[in-house]
Length: 241
Image 1 (cartoon, rainbow, N blue to C red):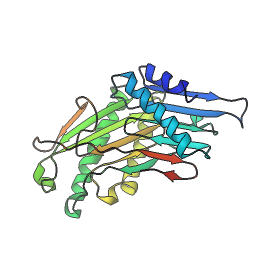
Image 2 (image 1 turned 90 degrees about the vertical axis):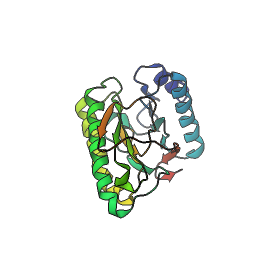
Image 3 (image 1 turned 45 degrees about the vertical axis):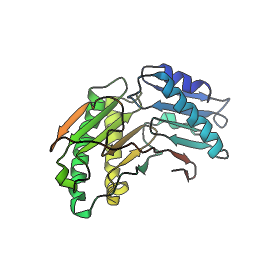
Image 4 (image 1 turned 30 degrees about the vertical axis):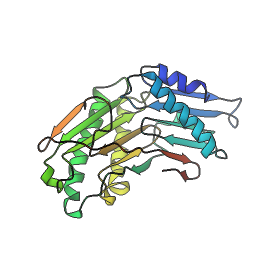
């Protein structure tokens, strides 16, 4: 399946595929492969997914439940039938290398991020039903945050097999985890992701193409270089970051 699933996902318009292989309940492997929805070329998706299966077998060789998260894709495979569920049973938070905020402006930033992520999630559910993916951008006044940045970028994505209601519920659950998992750090870049959906924000455009959602609070400005976030999640627990 590590050979066929990346090919299947990268060749489909949804950039998504699932599969199961085995002879019985205790001998079956279930797998999921999903690429970020802004991919235009299937080759980049294929490379990312193949790397996910390969790295998972190396880093988590003794584990039966493995999730690999990259910037551009993620894969999960397990001896448990997680495909029967639509929830984010492997939901985790990761941080980018973007700077932290002063506590005096952190509350304002969190308010802006929450508004942007909710608008981006709504667009992913309603306006992009094929890939259930959306990107967003908010212009803010640079003076709001001590001159550190003047844009906030966002991303929301679900696995395309979810219904619109399931996707919005999944993204809402990821959003509800932000105050506990992400916001206390006062970081300007983070994501909450699982095998079924995820949200991401940062202070530069980390995706390809123009944003699908635009919100404005202040004036225009520039951006910064993109960090790379690679994380492996194995069961019971293993993180490479």
